Length: 275
Ligand SMILES: Nc1ncnc2c1ncn2[C@@H]1O[C@H](COP(=O)(O)OP(=O)(O)OP(=O)(O)O)[C@@H](O)[C@H]1O
Ligand SMILES: [Mg+2]
Image (cartoon, rainbow, N blue to C red; front, top):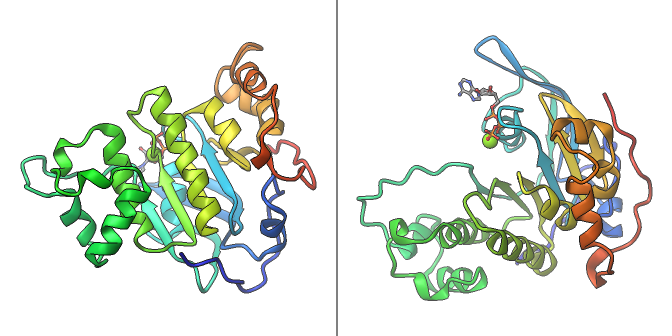
């Protein structure tokens, strides 16, 4: 897998969370400033600043309709913002898993044929499937996969691009809780093995809190962002998700009464909520 290379210098617009030290020092893969998007005359995103650095896992949280998918689309260049600027590293290579993929369920498309759409060779396709844990499903119909297997097939497709940034829009949709946890472990392993950064959208509040280096709460604008433990106690975050004192923060604390070898260094700085 390709390791991220350095990019053109760009001033930081967001505080680091607990991403690896190397990520804090590297130039961003993507840097967005003052991004505004209007759709059909309605402002969907306003004044969004955000940056993604190599090897960090950043999660965007927000209610339905808060602009998460729109933001991802703007960041990867699928949509042009009405205002603001998005800078991308010259060597940026995105492996995108969209929120929706409409496949005709009657179409006889095997997993291997689906992966072949990437242009990758058979050996690489099989290797990608094995890496995401569904090595035995190459000949299965895409329509016959379980929810978790389907998401893994999409991830394998993204992996074949050898990206230095995975952009995953609700990759754990439809998975049960063990499935969600396993998927996040896979994401973290891929980050460690490939050095790729991960930008994902999720609704799995408490799992995200343990699996991300940095969290961004979006509701048409960035309500708050920073290290998970900082965001978890931000009033903006709690208001956004209607959490009381026994909400995700309690779950997060419960899950973190022990230490992880992969927790990484302490954040250089904690960011205060913004409004
Ligand atoms: N192509 C479109 N045409 C019209 N409105 C759109 C379009 N795309 C997005 N919108 C509107 O922009 C807003 C943000 O949509 P977006 O899909 O980015 O939200 P989201 O945060 O990803 O929501 P969800 O959690 O449901 O996926 C919504 O009000 C949506 O209706
Ligand atoms: Mg969405």
